Length: 222
Image (cartoon, rainbow, N blue to C red; front, side):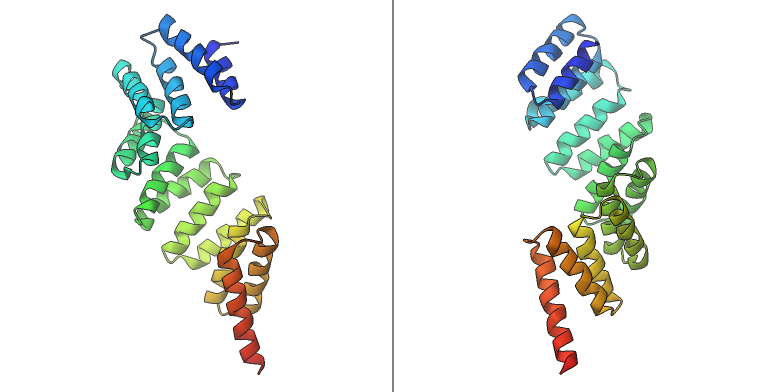
């Protein structure tokens, strides 16, 4: 087995020290190969050692300015630090070089989401759903961004699709409940809030929504 792959497998098993030892050997044996630095950077990012991760990604870029995954890794460092403009710059660079993966589009979209530039986030999140249509969390964030951009009908369809992938997604039920209120369909809203609470009993927003709907329905019955 390739040493890099061996170390990546160890990372998946949460054996980070063993993985680090192998990555160190890979770098010692191939100091001009950016892949070792990228993989070690990913490990450091995974254990939240952001400062060192940044240095490893920057070293990889120094060795190969077209190393798209190094820019992606660097973008993740800035994302974790909430330095969203720098994260955007690096994610976009990775895409420009040729990285065509759902994750990079998703992360780029999320940088705009956190800046509340919802309409700017939409095309990137849409592209992420196209590249990985079976990832319910990517799809959910796309739906949330549609809702924040006042595309309520489209958001409803997306949340329904989330539930087709994961019927225990409490937040999708909650947001469908909110949309049902928007559509003045209180009975559907109650069903979704109750389902969200069945899945996640501590879902505070769903609990508040449920009590408000019940109060409205009780007042209507009086």
